[in-house]
Image (cartoon, rainbow, N blue to C red; front, side, top):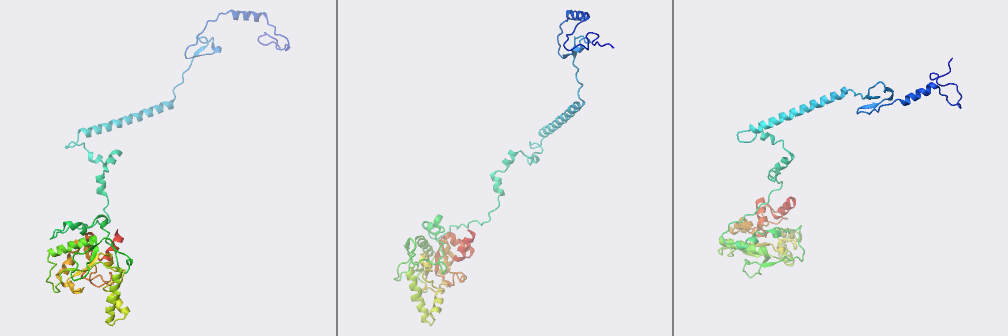
Length: 380
C-alpha cells in the first residue's frame, strides 16, 4: 500500500517534528507558477469574483449577477391598484360632466337646475347661515304667561293732563299702593302713612279737613274735576249735599274710638249683648289696626248725610262705580264679594286707590282686592 499522499508529494506518516521535504517536482512547479504573468482583471458593475471559476469565465473569475424573475404576486397587486385608479378617475369624470351639464342647462329663471333640492344638503357653513336670528324668533314657542294688560289713557271731559302721573303711576310707584289691609293683615298701632296731603273735596260741614297719601289725593282731585265736568257734583241732591268726601285717613286711636265707643255702644243700646254687638259692628266697621283708613289710601264719599246703602241708587254712585278705575280707584267692598272681603257689607261709598293699571285689571277680571293680590302672588 502506498503511504504517500498528495500525489506522492509528502509522507503521510512523517513525524510531527520532522520538516516537510519537497521534491524536485514540487520546487519546479512552484517556480513555474510564480513566474506566470497574470493580467489584471478589473471588476465590472454587476459582477462578483469567484476564484474557483477563474478559468471558466472570460472575465477572469468575475461572473455576471443573475437577475431574479419578477414575483407573480407583485404583478397581480399592481394590476389591481391600476384598475381601482382607473375606476375612480372614471367616476370623477362622470360627476364633473353632470355638474357642468346642470350648470349650463339650468332653469329658465337663471338658477341652476336642482338648486332647491340641493339646499337641503349644504355645507356646514351654509347650515349655520340658515339659522338666522329672524328664523329663530319665528320658531320660538309662544309665551305661556299672558301679556300685561296695559291701561289705556281714557278720554276725559276735563283737562286732566297734569294729573296723569298720579292717576296712572308707573315705574316703582305702579305697585306701591297694593297694600292689603284687613283682619288677616293688620297694620301696627303706630303706623302713619307718608306724605299725607289735604283732600280739597272734604265736605264743608265743619268737619276736619281729610287727608290721603299724596298720589291718592292728587288722583282724587282729578276724579272730582271730571265728576264736576260731567254734572256729578250738583247741589240740588235730595239731601242738599254735593258729592264730597266724608272720611279719609284715620289714626289707630280714632279707629279704636269709632269701633268701641261709637258703633259698639250704639248696637248694645239696641239690646244686643257685647259679643252680638261686636259681630254686627264688624260687618260695617273694622277693628283698630285692620282698617284701610289707617293706610291713607281710601275715602268715604257720597251725597247723603251719613253713609248708607241707599246711595247706590244715586246717579253719582253709578257714575263712580263705572268710572273710578280711570282715576286709579276701585270700589273696595262690592255687593257680591262679602264672603271674600271678610264679611264687610256692600259699601257703595267706599273707594280705594291702587292706580289705574291695577284698577283696570281688577275691573276686567272682576276681582276684589283680596282676589287680585292672591292672583298676582300665583301668577307673578
